[in-house]
Length: 564
Image 1 (cartoon, rainbow, N blue to C red):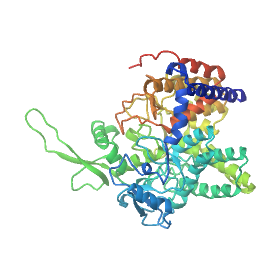
Image 2 (cartoon, rainbow, N blue to C red):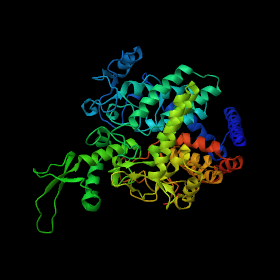
Image 3 (cartoon, rainbow, N blue to C red):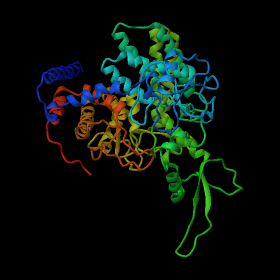
Image 4 (spheres, helix red, strand yellow):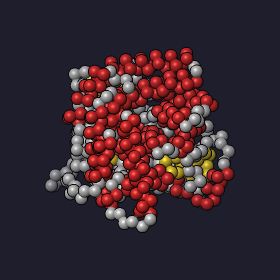
């Protein structure tokens, strides 16, 4: 591994030398520049995507058409910098109507107008429509920041999540008022451990921060391991949004999405699972959202128009899918409609990782008894994951519908999470890796093997999941596979960067294109992009020297015609 680190460092030094020569007046064509332009793009993007409470552009919300409002915790004194922001940016400053100790305490739909939630420190946003600090995005962003030595910015983001836990009840989906009903995949302990490791290596160990982290992480962990986040009687956990009905950001930003959902269930009644509810006065099933109408006609006349709505249970599943981060996919049923009925392999792998991280933090604090308690919790979750979520006959981890106790047959890239977390046995890891042959595509790993029209299914690959899968492969010694998949993804991102000068949130790994033809949910392919930037430098760092040099040479070749 040391030789790999050294090889990437050599390239960084070489690029700095080129930069100095270029500054002196030499002319360099884009094809001669190799990887330099994309690495410069990534390095400068950390600052471009940084937001703070002293920056006017931080308040803007591309998802909601409303005058900007910044909300402070109910018991929080307005900082001078915020008062200045109010004057300079014409931003309304408000306090939340009550103190919040846990998610679900406040009905976020009653906070009007929606606005940004205050955070104390600077943070990096994903980009585009995502102009706030996101939960799981930040883990990958922080890895990229640490790789480039931006420890202070990374620590500030972790402190922002501690602020959310203390003042908004949990690590939030993101710091907007309409996200006060849900969290996101619990990567926070991983963020903290990575930052603290970097601080220790820099001689900056901080015992007080360690103790603060332990308390806040324990509180956030408790949310996932108590009702309503429990997956029935399995001892595992589930995704669950405390809100009801369609989420505000989806109604305004994902034009026609719920109409498409309603049409799908009408045309596929076997999959509707009582999500379509007739609008007649006698029905008692809870409903929410907009009304839709159905009119059946032939050439001469029409039947009486019928009104219907989507059920409240559908919207609970939709919201919970958004807490999972995989919005939209068909992994938990059509449109993620049954998300809240599943114990997912990804979430429970993350909670295992949290338990192992808490064991480590306890040891750092010198709390041996607590370390043993966390170790036992991790071993018990590992046992439950193997019992409920391991499909021995198919050789991969999957999700469990805890209402029917049926394991999902949906092949999904989260099967690599247990390898990343280190809970898989060597035999399980070998079986999972054997699925690569049927999963892998020219640009890396897609999310699934089913093309549903949703962005979190085939043919799309996402840098964050490529990172986790490749980390998992390396952890169990499958370096050749990790190198190959890394190269497929890196070369695809670099090739598309040469075409349009941007890095995107997702890529079509079948055609190796950044063109997205998403039919369900928001339909643009967002530019930025936080976790793809991080994935590029992290995966590049892991490649052997000869593959980096090959990628460098590839950038000097003429561009090929993209596949259709």
